[in-house]
Image (cartoon, rainbow, N blue to C red; front, top):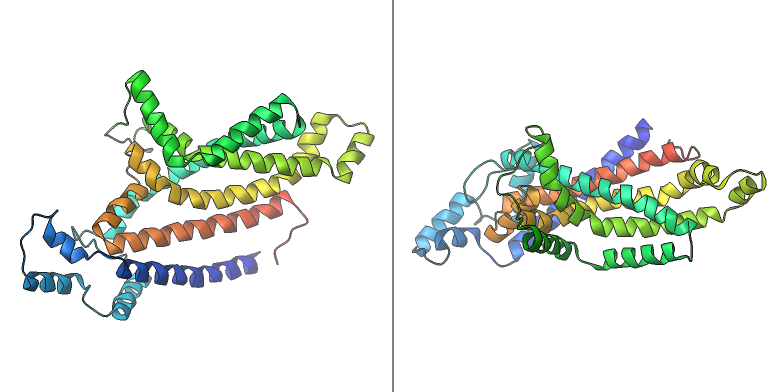
Length: 318
């Protein structure tokens, strides 16, 4: 197991390196000069070419792109994520304050999705071709088709019209006011998790149907075991492998989905920070946040691989 973990850990390095190269080059080729945006001040700034050149030298954006990348990577290896091009604050400080909120929101969304999706998928499989199955299939197809941001906007509009409710401006931290924090994040987590709920439910249904047709299930029935025992003791554990794979992948994808949901619900996480940073062309923030999202995806996939051995004893990592 330790050898397997070391090998997978080594694979993180080229993946993160490739992500860093792509995002670094992409931010330099798309239109938008941070020095120009800073001096322009929303279209009301007055500056000369000398002012622009001086600010570019101060920010370091006038240097060759290879020099800029080497400098950024060198600082990264020393644990320095850089400083904001706008307010000159350390990037690491802002990410430390916001990243736990994003992780909590993504975890809550996935937890809601799994808790609701697995029973729905199992019920749809057990009651195949009944009205239960048809209703669940309509719900899951609608959930997969509906965009996450649209569902979030729909929740806010409905609550504002019916209950005169709007997202709170003040945010309570989990370690300060746990109950208030969970109340504030429940609706964003629900909006974020609806798509995954529907998708996981469909995967659960397909996986359960496939397992219920296996020979060992027919053997268990021939021995006289009850359907409940067959389902929970024999079928669900094997049907859980595809569900686990999808859940792990979706957790990494949720890190991208939080961008719009955090903006819609005014959640102070890294998603809303990324939106602000892109608008201002704040390169250090954008590069660090994208790398962090890639790292979360890699770790999620590794955890899923390790859980395979727990669910299926035949799997061994050597």
